[in-house]
Amino acid sequence: MPFRRFNAINILGVLFARPEAEMDEQLLNHERIHTRQMLEMLVVGFYLWYFIEWLIRLTQKGNAYRNISFEQEAYTHERNQNYLKNRKLYAWTKYLFKRNTYHRPK
Image 1 (cartoon, helix red, strand yellow):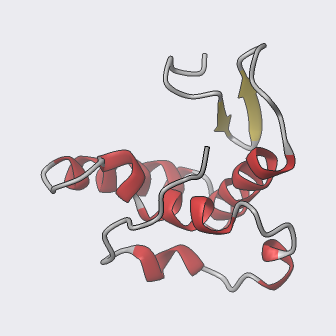
Image 2: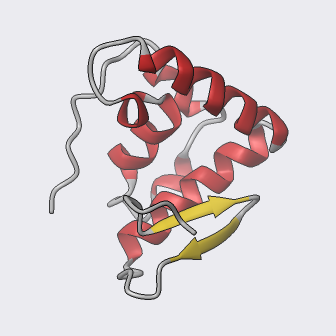
């Protein structure tokens, strides 16, 4: 754990990372954004919505994982260390009907 393609995974607000993963501020902020999303969706709602949206995104063009609204919000704002200070509740919903145009720089 986490899955082969990922350096880290956030489960119930606990971050699991590969030993070789670079735990930089960008990655930590990405996962903090997910923790906030979990809390506002009362955790269970987050995982249900995530899974259902992933299933729907599988039928659409593009990368299903990258097109999930939770991921789009986290990737878009992971470099902004002040994002969570001003983030509005349910900010991820503005990404529901957008196709992902954000590509994480290497």
